[in-house]
Length: 102
Image (tube, rainbow, N blue to C red; front, side, top):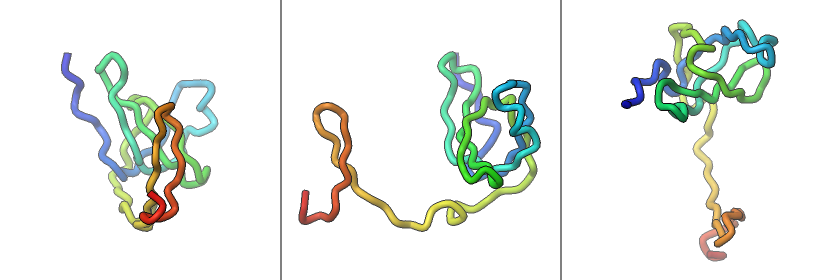
């Protein structure tokens, strides 16, 4: 089975409309999509949404979100800085301070 095309684009502003009691307090909140992955059964999408008033990201199934018709910009969330991480044989990561320390 092929995964359907995602309904929401990266940085698209969405409104929370969920029936999940654990997330009901988030209904009406607006945020921007910062990540997405298809569901395990490949029938829908799961989104990481940065909620503006919460100043944190939450995960939602596609059916828990509705479009606002607006889009944020990547620069609204990322300033262009980056870091390097070295992963050891056990899967643990450490931040590499500079190229000379590699």
